[in-house]
Length: 178
Image (cartoon, rainbow, N blue to C red):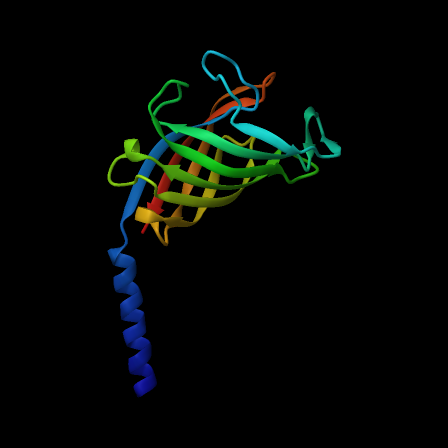
């Protein structure tokens, strides 16, 4: 009898905790600048730290194992001079030998401009990014500050891509539960 009561109380606590969680929707644009292109992008924000050995099929530019360290701008809009709301800091690597697919590990660190007391708060993502897909999902694996203990997901879309420079602007809709 005591075990059944304990299970009931734990179940009730879990249901109440889940009901108390709030979902925050954040939309921002990530500017992944591999090649500087003044005046819009005076400096690169993605640096290739490891050059892979095997070229990807149908893609002479990228190689399996290529690893980029990033400190990408997060902005309100897709334009390079749009209001800065944070930085995406981490890395991505080409992790498939057969397709253009990345392993992305990054912290989305927000500034005061993001509003709602998000200054210094971060959302951590760890994801497989099949970059040729129209929509990709980014699992939220944690957070800090206002997003401590966060779960959720992000939906990633390529807003623009320049094949000659490898520069990309990505739209991210993040749904974060705390």
